[in-house]
Image (cartoon, rainbow, N blue to C red; front, side, top):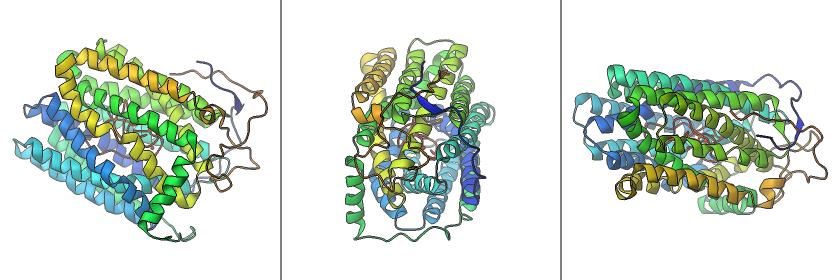
Length: 485
């Protein structure tokens, strides 16, 4: 794939990461280790109790439904209260719900409604955590080296995803899903402890504004006033939904019936994680000038995992496809969060992030709930091919938006966190072709999703959400399809 023009293959050496950046990275690594294993454990806990594809889809939908309902409130709260306190409270809820889920499975004969209730509590925690976490990450870095810092962050996080998915699949096969869920609860507890140490003393206090509804209206104006923002979020509302359904519902079933069970599926998800590390390594050195064009072109390979499951291909080929998809979607992920950092004012990070997440995952509960009935109506193979086709169609459509093709990375003289860009102002105008174009080699749940999805970036990976494509720092408790953050 020939990448869009780039103004530099490598910029100046980044400044030493600050304390908050280091703590955020360490905490997210810990939760990703646990959550990527718990993702596999949740699906096989349902199947182990005699559940079918509809039951797996219902449990996944139960987590994403409260996520959708409470996201906007979570974004407004995170822009009013200290973000680290919101994150710690959310981690506490996730810890308790995952621990209860694990004990329920270990006790034997859990009911589907019980698993749905506990995953719904996890989704509620995620709704408050995700906007606060993404806002905190963007506020912890500044200046021209933000893109490099985000890429390094994602290398660490996605590296944990590799180990978490591979180890999780092996542990589910060896000791059962219940213990893997208990381990994930411990990871949330440890990560919450680290996040309680974040320092906000250097950040200017944020004025609460005219009330919660006024804050939400202000966030909506920021969101809808930027065509590049709402069009890509609309694109990912479809991408996250179909990829999440394919990988949180159909993937475990294909693994059980054709690939040999949770071990090979965990290996495939680990290959996706390895791909995201490769993509993030590329983005440490490569700074594409047209950020969104480069990123959007790299979304097309996200259709490949669904196609591979539809055939289905051998485990080795599936791992290769996941590797390629992970690498390319990570290019989108880093490009997306760098664009958000450049274009959105700091005091509105969390509110705009909440609209981003809501739009990106809004259709995911419906898609996961309908995945089982769709399989029964048209067959699993046809459903998977439909998922692949939709990814290609909506990604091609978003390239028709001029701002997506033209938004450019700012030069050192104008770099910032969106402070000088009003709605609809897409970065520096492009006056000439970039003289230093390079050839990029593409090497890929859900919900906050697809590993690079705008809001779901870590909620979906091949977001069955085992790693997500969202650019944000989101962490998805078990049941989330692999989303970017």
